[in-house]
Image 1 (cartoon, rainbow, N blue to C red):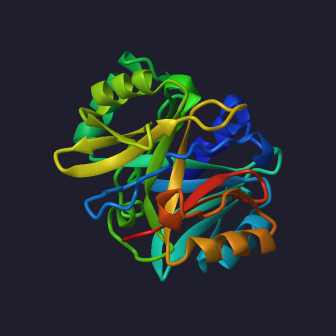
Image 2: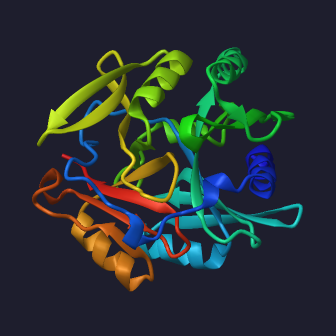
Length: 286
């Protein structure tokens, strides 16, 4: 797991574009918002929160989702493993010299697929944030910048990130969604890089897209609703009550970008921002 920590540290010291988060007042959420309530949805994504204040972030997400933590210290850097009901679901790392927090989403792949997928992503226009790194017994990880600046990671599947492939219940990950400045460009990139299909649906005259393989929904995509930030991947957490989460977010010092409303997903969706700027969507499953 040291591989994950070290790569993220290097990226944060060399990349600035991906970490400029919008404030609440600059975010306009369209009427047609995420549709992530399908039972066939499949994620398998590992998530790491990069934060300038680990203590504050731990308290915020514990208050919000009841997450517990396991602490590690690697070469002077604090790292926290996130557990939901004793299942490992992700991690946090403190980088004091950054101004805002962000979630980095990583797709764990078998070794036989990882190298070819990295090459394919680069040939389709992705840029390496750092050179690929490899650590014995843990494998390889790269962080890539896709179209419009959306950052994502590809890594070797191992004993640490494999739990992300299983369902760990309420207050765990529901999926991810791409906020894209140019959905057509994003469709082409991800279709060619990951051999997925893109399905468009229309509701209230507004488009929404799914990335799919067969009948399985892998991720969602909307036109970027943020006015001062490039494209980004936003993680979803499945919750029992989005309204309760919004209330708790305010009490815990976060901001609310979208409060649940009957006109959007029947009140099942909220979008929040933690005290240091990272975006998270909370949604009730059917």
